Length: 308
Image (cartoon, rainbow, N blue to C red; front, side, top):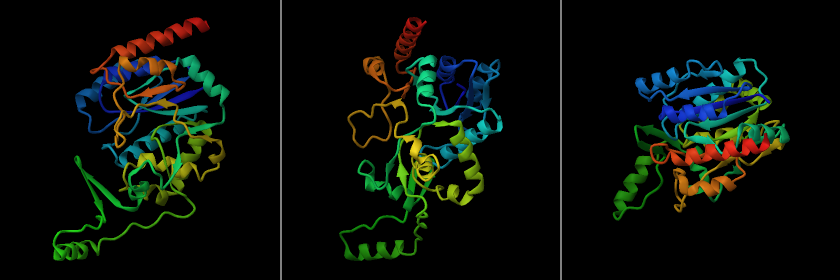
């Protein structure tokens, strides 16, 4: 079972190294993207700590602001790098630098062997009830990011106390262009931005994006496109019938129904992690709580000893 991991990271070099060491074995390769906005010092630290790893590769860097198309470009760079090795990987798994495995290498491989040929990607049709406005505004509006400022066009209609103000505002936004609709050939889907896909599916994606730049470019200037790009593409692909709506990852969104980020997992979450059937979990921050990572490592070591 040959596995490739595409890992997107931008901070915490030690935590990234810990993740790689935990997953590392002879039949595993790592394709790491370090965000271009990451400082040179941190980037050099990451590269230095993997200098003796022949199975660790660094891919072309992009400045991936949260919610930007650059996040999609970074994963596509990883897919391209995986394909260019000409190694027949059985599975390619997309992780972030703040993910961590909650199952042993042996358990991961056994799960993939038992589910060989299946694609793991959370998906749901758009519009949906879980995203604001059904999620369609993510794709139908023009979205721009400038530092931490998020702008979108056309702005929604607004009612002002002054009728004249309402009329003037309506006239102001009237000439702003609407985005062209997606082709009916590609029904819209959303879901988690992480996935676990077969090597055959990865090769198909690489070929498709090279031959269909218009499809790829349509996701530029959309909102959080990495939560729609792969779902919309693969749900109209030859792999559709093999997709399981699961990203194999434990997450806790906390009590905020409108949260855009999952909570940081700590040792108080360990029992839930222990009972989870997922292979991975996110997200962790060793500067907040490193003990939970120690507890996971001890659990994995204990499970591996029982198997042996």
